[in-house]
Image (cartoon, rainbow, N blue to C red):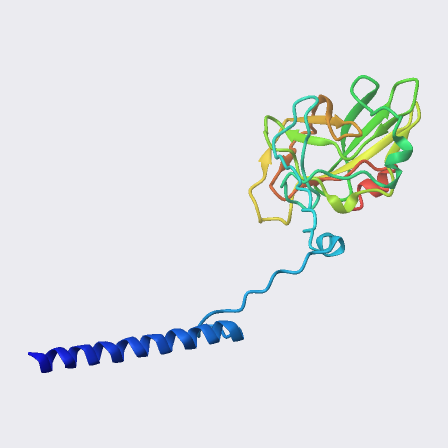
Length: 239
């Protein structure tokens, strides 16, 4: 029994000595700045300068473009593009837009509109607006059209956009060409009897609709288009 107790005390003394040795080594490591394995260095982040903050600002997002394909009610935006597609893209005014800022739009109240047949090019009509008022008016953008009771705006040919907004003195006229059909055989033509013509103002908002009787045997398909208002007949019918 005495022998076993001596051995137990000896083992305990050896373990205590080993623990004290490890503790002493740990203290030396801390004093020398030694870090335990697997511990990542942590640095205090440098202060961000005002210039750095300015450079890290995200760019402002591009403005979206609101679109519509329905025939506009009066005072509402209307849409249409000019590549034979009616995706509702809003046409933009030409460089002369600022010069006509104070000129009122040509509307059913100060002008008249008529539609007529032409011999060349084939499958085309000519739309004419005449200033019947006593002051100048501007034929903004393109006429928005609908054949019979169509709810979609007839496509607008964007390539026909003029250099400047067409301004009419009393008695003067502006013109828009209407292409009725695409290539023969591509689509089934749909006969139409009446044409709704919507004039718009500088903000591309409806200023009223005029309904016209179409020439006999008028038919359209999905590949037709109308041009922007032009100052002469040749430009209106060149597309």
